[in-house]
Length: 291
Image 1 (spheres, one colour):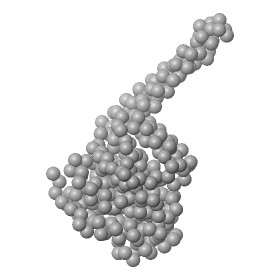
Image 2 (cartoon, rainbow, N blue to C red):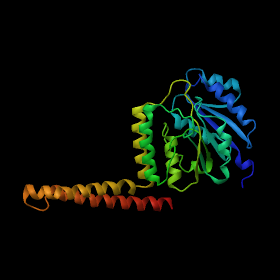
Image 3 (cartoon, rainbow, N blue to C red):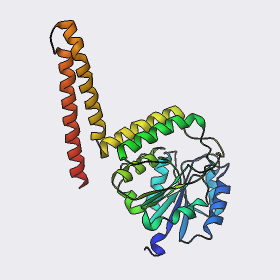
């Protein structure tokens, strides 16, 4: 059981042009946390806003760090993490989409977890329809590599043990993929990750997410993350695909050339073996590095 000082939390709020709703979010946070069973501090990281966000936060008296230019969601979080002075930190968006009072609920699982994630699977969840198919596929892909069921891969409401996250800080991206990457990293490495169902509200202000670009970026990042933590999960299916393709080509080659194996089937089958060998080598390197 951790004592109260071990449970102190810095709540990091990354903000970029959130003048529309950040004042209400901060007021609700202060009201909610006034009865929190843990010590806490609010920290806003203004990621180069140009709409008066910084001035609103400064008037509230809340600790603020300001980037001179827009560097990205993940960069703002990393600045906040490095600047926090507590064993734990939480993240929550400045746009009013996440229910602030759920932070208290999430904190109840700190004794048994290294990361507690507010999964947007509650009774009232407002995720735009255009983002749902891509979100479902990306979540499935992440579940495949981690061998874990993932209710919500990139939720922006979570509490994390700072010591655990610092291990991966050099790998974490500066963009919106921050939350996806840390989820996969900690799941694959066996950290205790707890999912707690929460609601998700309509956004106040304009979304910063670009559906097509960010979806492709998410997928690319997940594949790179897989390669870093579990390369065989990529190499093995690709090797099997090449092997089966080579087998399927055999009768076609025999019919066309009269030979059982021609150059096409030979190249495919040899490539299958080479890809598998590379995957095994990469897996050995990853395991030796992590140990």
